[in-house]
Image (tube, rainbow, N blue to C red; front, side, top):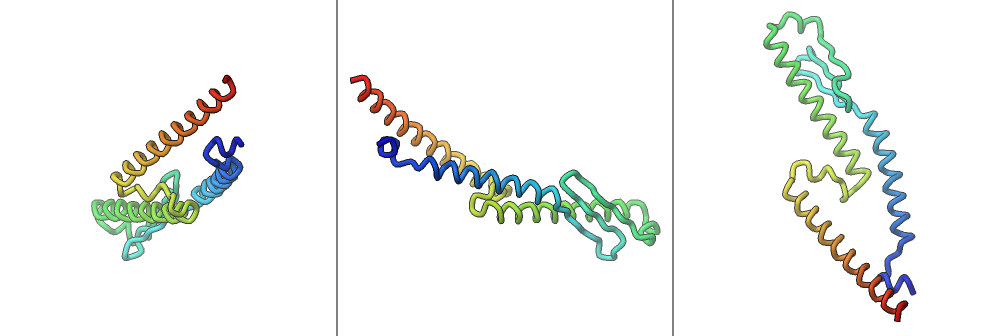
Length: 145
């Protein structure tokens, strides 16, 4: 009777899904902590590893020290950005694997899509709230009549 009154919501299924989502999130955190973006310049003179906490490793080939300081600095910056991009790509792939279509990273380059999704979520929440409150009001009326 309660299931019918609440529009047939399967609370057990909702709780199981929430538990599964939490377990996936815990595994994702472990995976993300281990990810390292890597990049190297075309000559192999500058190599960078970049992780979630920042720069993990910077290796300069002895020949790199012969470069003018401005060129060496430019190469380090470029390779660091490439390593950072590699890490972002890995994070996006890990999140896609974990969350599938519900991947929050899908909005990283689509703020309009994120806003549209947020509006849809608010509308769904409002509808659900209204439905539940309506059912509770009817139940309250029946019990007090």
